Image 1 (cartoon, one colour):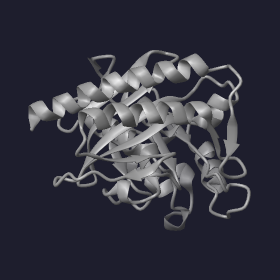
Image 2 (cartoon, rainbow, N blue to C red):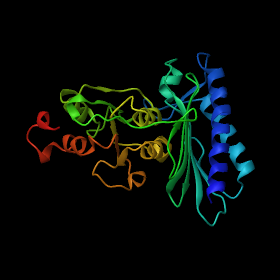
Image 3 (cartoon, one colour):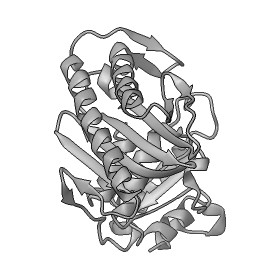
Image 4 (spheres, rainbow, N blue to C red):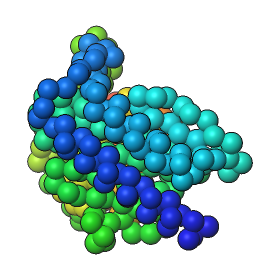
Length: 272
């Protein structure tokens, strides 16, 4: 299985790089943009990159299943329930507006547990990768999470759901609260890169309320294999089965959980 997993990772890295070239070539040009919701976009390059990734991996692993953001579930006939989870452009809104912060995200799940993960930022030529039980890497070099141990010295990231205009569960109160008890909260627009930035120590923690598996499957494994911690918003370890996620360097995880649940404390400024 070890050599097989290495092959899965190698092929995922190859196709992430080639898909990255597709979206890099289209960056800054005029795109065909469609709206899946009020602020939920999809471009022609999302579709081109996804078709390329799925076709490439299907050709090499015809028994595997696929869950892709634009195509949905494509079932294979694997008895081991191996499923590729694909986001061709994580950060489509950034991409469509010409903002240079987006990535290709690919993960392989075995019985709904990530075992291989790749996130590729084509503009910075940064490829984050991990396989279960092995150190996470950035362009082949091992990476580790930060050593920040208090929430008030940490730098965090978050995101907001696509129904932020209409839903009461829109993360704005959490954003306000955490801004006041940390070094700052960034809203960068790509969950996959937010998670990878925790893995390499650029950020110390991240949370988001409503995500899809393709947003977080790859990044979550990369955090874990870099020494970090990932749970859902209630602290449960089966984070991929839930739409909320908290990821951190591990040292601030309990404090971050507490700050996101103000009903358990009277003053988040005391959280260390």
